[in-house]
Image (cartoon, rainbow, N blue to C red; front, side, top):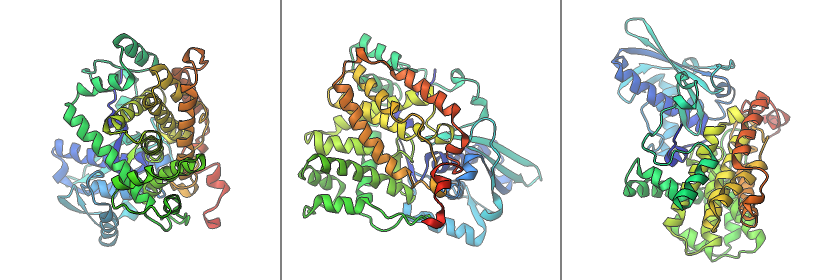
Length: 475
């Protein structure tokens, strides 16, 4: 049984994609560590990087080449100053030298040494291979797979969930929704309490709180930056940022703030008619994914392409539903969201390259819906019902980014996913779960079956749908 920490589901990284940017970056870090562990790092004279399948087809639009250069240079996506990214990449492109692992200068020309192969490797749509030429003349190759949400694996993990490394110390190992509900019933606990006990088997309460604070502060700062940055997004589509104008129009003259925290307080004092609420939720979601599209820092939730849904719904709760909410409410929300996401990852996928956008926006909407339901007083059964409702109405959603960029339709889809999550929570709260016809586990299974039936054209390849219906030249 695979046991996943919520800090695996909610990772801090850089945009625009968890599978195409953060994953390859982490794979580069892992390769460097493995070369050092085997005593081969200092023997390396040249390196090449090979991308396959979805990574290759949409790699340019997802800044996968940037991710490789930054990861191979020894930088960390959580710590690197965003403003340093372009200068590091520009220096490599201009001088054709890579500071490998931040300690070894080797020749590297991105045009020749980062190779794009349309071929799909058998194990996963997002395959990548590092090739090192050693002083002895021998070649060392390592192949990895970026499976979504920043997770990176090797092929040896192919044979079943049972072979995946687990946290044996989890007191409540969970694979399915039915198991989660059984623990809630036998222990008389809500879902967030069950998740907390699992996390306590890995780290102390103070460590848990510190990491959660970091995650929430990153989400809040991301929304704040997105709402206070105007202009057009990079990449060639000339997409205009919309969160800036939305935020300005909704706030009106209420601009007496100077930080993300005081901005949140200011929003609490604004008008809360239905249309304004819709606009605020959309504003929060758009803001995050506009930051993501410009290589900004976001939290995978569960992916970068769907990073706006969870912060938007949590912000909705904080500024609309409960003005007295504090860190404990944020903590519960993230616990529940992370657990629901892990159930989808174990039973299906969170990779658009494997399952289309239902695996990203659909899962994030389900995560947010369930988390909001617990904060609004829902039972564990209603929490899972809300998650099921949210996913049910994303089934079959394709991934067809125009130009391979995480912009159209990706940014707007975060807004729609957030609104659906709130609606799903309200539907679940007004329903008796005993009358539900579709349990969460069944919708997870259905989502995976739908993913397997879906044409590869609609799985983050930019070979179908809007990606071919709209030309870059039209933009």
